[in-house]
Length: 159
Image (tube, rainbow, N blue to C red):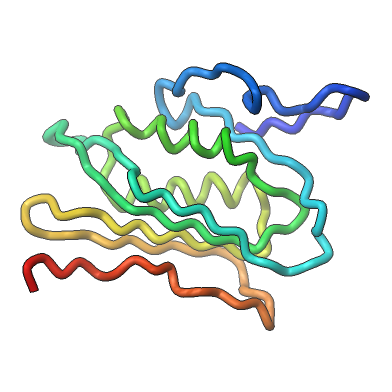
């Protein structure tokens, strides 16, 4: 659920930034917040790198670990980073497959922000000897925007 209340003079519409907030019990209960983009007339890339993402295998209950990279070209909105951090932490006890986690995060951000373009790369560490990488994107990349490599090497094992 997006939170963007009307701005009251002297009061921020954000409810989590600067407050002591517990980690949400699940991604569905997490509250993502957004703020106006002060450069909405400019195409640029914002990147969030999450090298210690965790969730739970829905079958075995064992922990799964990933390195996530989220890139987006904002439109009118930016995601507030503390709310994003709490949302991502809410996956710690959430049972879902790698593909579900990665795509669900991308879709939720796209719905909240309506970015010009967004991509997420989920680089999952091996379970049962097989690493899984999951990629999702939406929107059309504006012409002339520089998109750096996500910087996460493919898993090589002992190679």
